[in-house]
Structures are given as structure tokens and as C-alpha cells.
Image (cartoon, rainbow over all chains, first blue to last red; front, top):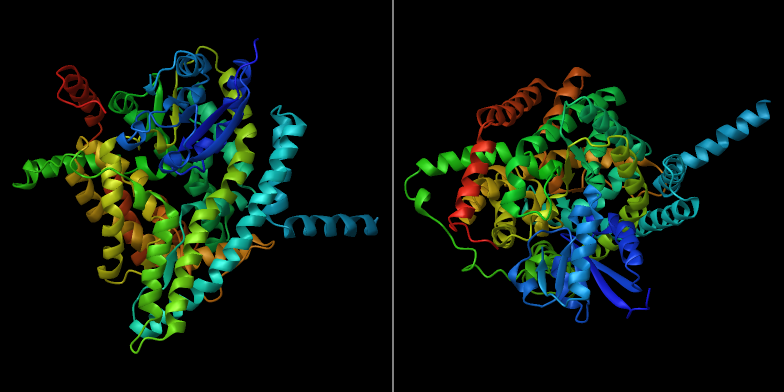
Length: 106
Length: 484
């Protein structure tokens, strides 16, 4: 697979402690499968605004507060991973990084 | 022979004496190997966990020293009943995982969950690994107060089973309500979903109360900028400073007093801001093991349909949750000072009402005003009183944990409001204490009343879930419900 640009991914759950920590190995697998090289930062949804140059936000949440949406990052929910459904997440990541979609990608 | 035995005994004593810093990594390594995690990955996890606990202990020791002084000053100066500080769920989450048998217990619950799904007793697989701490902590609380692990285990299983059944029960509507990305997801987060039946009942009651049944606050009119009440750094500083001023600053003004108040602000802020960094190492270290177990369990059930139970964080992006979360924090702080006999100063949990009140809001169709009322009338008083009652037991548990675990001086000092957010589990604990002959009969009556209210409201509302699903679908189709 062609070498792609290094991307910055933020994993955000409510507190930045629990779900986003548990999900790291699964997210790494997916990003590796897609052939990305990446840096992962973690935090709560309130901290997303403190990271100005993200390529992708991945979150537990299925909705996002408006002030987070206003930041204009593409947001993909990783909740399906817990069901073992990595295809949906992979598809959404591609829509975000390759088709340039912004906001909550469903 | 005796020499070897003595040596082994010494080794074992040393191992247990090291506490969670060593016991939990070894557990994760052993169990990880059994469930097929690569040894190199498990080793990395183990080191993360040990470092997480070491960092946590250091911070905890620092904050206990400062809190002991302030609580003393509050009592001797202002004669307040407030003598327990809420240091947040994150620290207690780590304590829950620090119990020697915690990892083993949680895996036991996973396997039980799998068996019960296979035999169609429950439909939800609770993969919300991290939140099991509330059960392990209460099992341990029952063990240290009654001396019986078996009683704790029975109570834990009953509570776990009730919550898992509740996850099944909310599953039909929770997905469409929060527009989850795939079907088959539900919420299995113990200390928020157990409020769902009461939330439904309150909604019915508010429908009949004049004036209140007309009030509908629009989340968009309440500024939804989380800013302040979302960030522990600022909440910790401001609340710490306020408490410090109350405890130390008198007229005539003394510079040392102002310094002491500022120091308290900085210390509580540092604690609330950095403890999550330590605990995320512990939880992150559990990641590979939890994933391996999830895979193991799902692989054993090919073609079987079941719900996957997740953390309540899935829901909190909705605008009504954010609005209530922001408004609830100052209300809780004021309530702590005016509620008679309350012992708890809310601090670490002020940023978490957004999660704990979720099911008192969504069951009221996202009505912010009703959500807040429910929080003020039900959640906050119960959670404050119960978490206050847990404070001496928390000290006892920390003493039993061994290792380098910092223990507060005196009888009671710290708690988390989350411990009070599970009145059902607290009631089971009181019943266990009564059975073991260390409880009082007034506690037993309280426990029975609490259980009657929670199970009774669930029974009354047993059909509400399906009804609610229809209402949501109709509202979505007719465009009545604004999709966030």
C-alpha cells in the first residue's frame, strides 16, 4: 500500500479515562490495516478544542455537542468496535480521511 | 523442606504486601496468557499498570495531607457537618481495580454473562470493562465490614444481574433515541441505568403537576459551552479555593491564610487534573486483556444475537445532557451546604453529573427542567448521604489494601459521589451487614425501602420501554424531535 501522510488522531470519551483507553488496541489495528502511520492523542470531549491540528477525532459518543462540531474536525464513532463491527468504522474513517467529509460521520 | 516452605511463604507475603502495583500486573500477565494475548503486549500492559498505581499513590498521599488540614479547620472554625471530601470516581475506580482479586472477579462476571446469554437468561453482553470497579469495590466493602467474601459475591451477582436485565429492558429504545451508529448496542453502565425506572415514574408524575407539566427549556437557550464545568483543572481550583477561603480566611486578613486557601485550590486542581492521567494507564493496561476476552466470548457464540452493553459516555454528546451537566454542578455544591446532616463536600464528581443523570433526563424525553428536578430530588440527596456513609468504610478498605497505599489519618476523609449513585448496591451491603450481625435494624429498614422503591418502580414501568420506543419512532418520523 502506498505510503500515506502521517495523521493525528484524537480518541475522546467522556472523561478521557475509560472507554478511550480500552479501545486503543482496536483502533491501532484498524489504522494499521488501512496503511496509515499515525499519532494518537487522548482526552475528554472537552479537551478536543485544545488540539488545533487533528486529522480525525474518534469518540465513544454517537452525538457531539455543537461547540465540538463547530471545530470542523471529521468525527467517527468507535462504538461499533465493541460489537466486533470494524467494517463500519473502517468505512467511516476512509470517508473522513480520503473523501474529506467533516462533522459527525454516520 | 521447612526452609522452602518458609521461603515460599515469605515470597507470597512480599507479593501481596506490594499491593496492586505488583498483584494486578501479574494477574493481567497470567490471565492475558490464558486468553491468548501476546506476552510482550501483556508485559507492556503490566508495566503501564504498575506505573499508573505508583503515580496514583504519590498524588493521593499529597492530597490527603492537604485535605486533612482543611476538614479539621472547617469543623473547628465553622462547625459544619462537612468532614468528607469527594475526590472523584477516577481514584476510586483505581482502588476498585487495586483489590487483589478484582481482575479475576471481573473475568468471572464475563464468563457468567456468556453462560447466561447462551441459556437465554439475559440478552446483553456487558463489555464495559472499566466500570466493573463499582461492583468490585462494593464486594470488597462487604468483605471488610462483614468478614465474608461470599456475602459480597452474592450481593455483587444480584446487583450485576439486575443491571444486566435492565440493559435488556432499555435496549429497544436507547439505540433509536441516541441514534447509535449500529443496531444491537445498549448501555450497561451500572450507576446510570439503574435510575431509568425512577426516571420514567417521575416523568409520569411531572405530566400531572400543573405549571411544571408546561415547562420546557430549550437546550439551545442554555449556553452549551462546557468550558468551565467540563474541565477538572478549573473546577478543582475554584472549588478548592472557595473551600479554602471558608476554612482559613478570617478578619483581619492574614497573608498566610490567603496562601493556604490558594494552595488548597492548586492542590485539588492538580489532583483532579492529573489523577486521570495515572488511571488511564491502569485502564489502558487492561485494554488488550478486555479485547481478548470479548473476542473469546463472542467467538463461542456464533450466530447468536445479543446486545452489546457500553459505557454511558455513548450518550453524553446529546445537547440536553450537556445542559443538565453544566447546571447540576453548582446546584450540587449549594445542596451540599444546605442539606441537613450531609457530610460530603462535592468536588471530584462535579464534572460527572453529565453521565450520572443521563437516565433521569432521557426517560423524561430530554426535558432539561425535569432532568434537573429529578437530579435534585432523587440523585443528589441519596448520592450525598450514601457517599458520606461510605467514607469510614473507604478508609477501612484502603487500610486492607496493603502495599504503599496511602490511608487517611482519622476515621473518614474521602469518598466519591459515584459510590452513592448506586443505592441498590449500598442497600445490598446494609443487608449483608445485618445478616453478618454487624448491621442495625434501622439500616435494614432503609435498605428494604430503597430496594422496594427501585425494584417497585421498575415493575410498574415494565411496559414503558416498548411504549417509549413507539413514541420516539413516531416523533422522529413526524420531525417533532429535533435530531441533534
